[in-house]
Image (cartoon, rainbow, N blue to C red; front, side, top):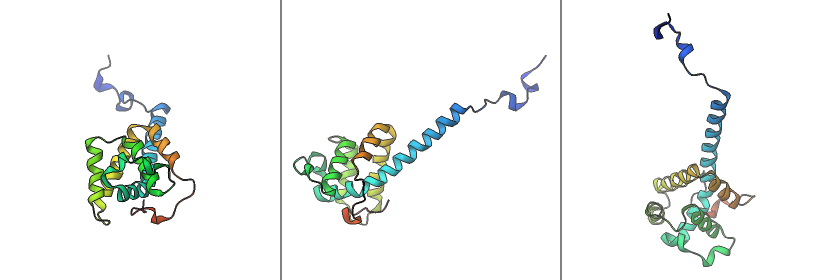
Length: 145
């Protein structure tokens, strides 16, 4: 007659399977990719916000150009669409901030990362929008990852 307390803890604990370990690895890889892509887009999106201000999501005329600002505007539009209140607020904070105001850029990067976490396909699409060769660091005010 075995009771629950007679069973060794290792016998009742669920074992991690290869599927659990694979899922954890995929989650970690997805998280890392979201952070990396968000960091890579920051020079472009901050350049676009610097150039176009809070109207960056509504810009269309300049978007055909190959400038870093136009690329950043296209990236922001792809990520945020025409902008909900939260995305417009963070873009407005960056637009009104001083160039050395790191907290606004961190908030923007966090908002972008959250969008990438929620939609891995979006992250892949935005990553494909980035140039294959790095552009000069002067593309925007946030040239550091």
